[in-house]
Length: 74
Picture (cartoon, rainbow, N blue to C red):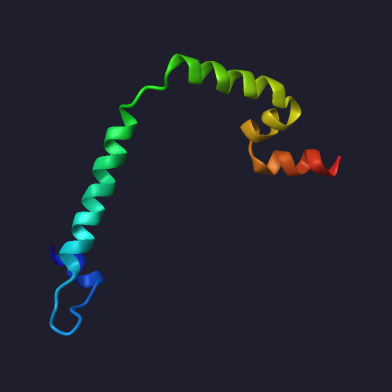
């Protein structure tokens, strides 16, 4: 709790740091749960089809923004 008390000082004598602590714990819990989630097979197929349709743009986004900018200048 002392970590969060350093971020949010007491306001009118009211310590609001536990609220920030609970919100942070909730975000960490949600992200940890979502890491274990699997992508359904039908959604995987749709994503693969969309990547094939995009053509050159999808190749540029995979390589990174800097290379995409180089393609734009050509």
